[in-house]
Image (tube, rainbow, N blue to C red; front, top):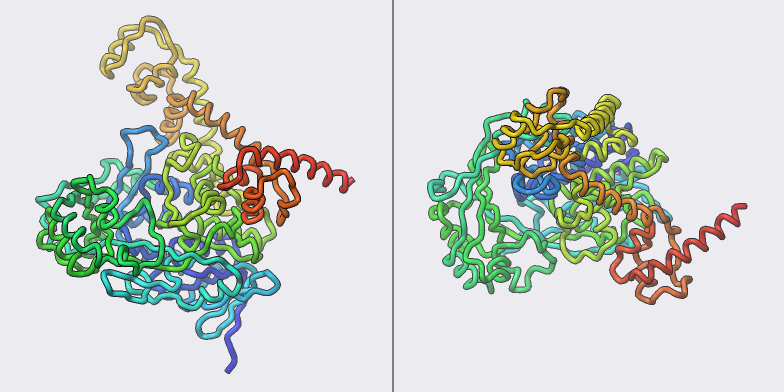
Length: 632
């Protein structure tokens, strides 16, 4: 029987959040792209929490949007509640978070894929990589069909050899009972790709009609909604929002859990994979935080057209009967009816040290990967990697320079650098504390930081880029102006300061100095600034931040300048570090293993000391001199 053979520029395996971004990027850059999914209905599926964004994750979504990705646009059109987190703190940690209508989010992303030129959707299980002489040539599916391509992007999520567990029940399925992908792992092994076994989990879904909301605290959205996408008209997202609800576990809940720990596969030894430290199950919380009398439980709607409610904070793999008992001890959940059991899910993923910062495999040219397949967790981390992997797959096909984001310019850069440089023994989760330059990497300025890169690769339009350039000009001009606006200690000024509980002036000062006071802002001082121009809301926000945090921003920019010096010192590819005699043995081993692309990356590898970096810098200078002489 003849087999089907087709040819594309790029094959994308998996249509979760990573796969969607990868495929859209390639297709929008004009490459004939095919995206494979085990189920068309699972495109951009949200099998766990019903939200996009959150602390640090909101930064990632904004950056995805600034580079020309789709996630921010999609959630702006399908959210049912929105909230800016950490507003009581500084702007560096402000993060947007939106509750999604899960079904609508998936439906809209599917519609987007189906109507994107150069993009073909294919429901099929990819079972094999076609690799010849260290170069990927395409993929094969379960039916035996071959799809040849110039690049392949693997975004398999949690589907590889997946199994779901609760109590002693084991279902060999992917998330939400979907079919797993059981064959591709063997092909990865055959191509000498190192595999990890990781675990994640999800809480139960409960019927809304069985809940008593009078025993919970209502959690409303923001009065003024801020969109994720810089292209969304802010007025279009000012919608009527639904509420979430807050309740708590208690001593009875904890006692039930402790009594049944031996029945949890997490503690019985049934689970082989390593779970995420920063998203623990309720069993883990009760054991590791035994001194805590209660834990927060968020009851969140899964959409406008369903009664399913997500029990945030109570992920579990305990048996079904125990789940009923423990959930029903929580105030408001006494009569809870479970729609879907909580479960843990195990799956195969790769050791990401096998990747370059471009997310291309070091040993197989043209093979890229993104998302939970790379050992991370979360929809946002997945989408960010998928976008970068897709862009770089496209750049490799087009013969253009890759997109490499470093730690000083984006949270995406921090995410990828941590994955490919550090030893990850659990699913990686993005956190603001992991970004050294977080005052510069705010969610509000993602467009100013990254739009030029999105424009350079071809995903940002000329019109959109022109506005970002104009926005930068307006900000700089206004910051310069207010630094030189003198304010006298007159009655009008003193009255305004008194209204804002700010210390009266004894002598004249500048408008900028007043803005730097914690209790005052650029907008608060509009009445004493008659020359103030009409500026867009987002420009005003940037002016206020630039002036108020001027000293801190300049200090971090100086630190970034030093950081860039090491990042710009490139290291040779496939180099044998055993040649450098002065390096310690451990440093040689780690450098040979990771093959860092620059000295900066080398300095972040565990086991490489500052002394080793000094030796490396001396050797690199000598090596570069020899290279220059040989060229002469």
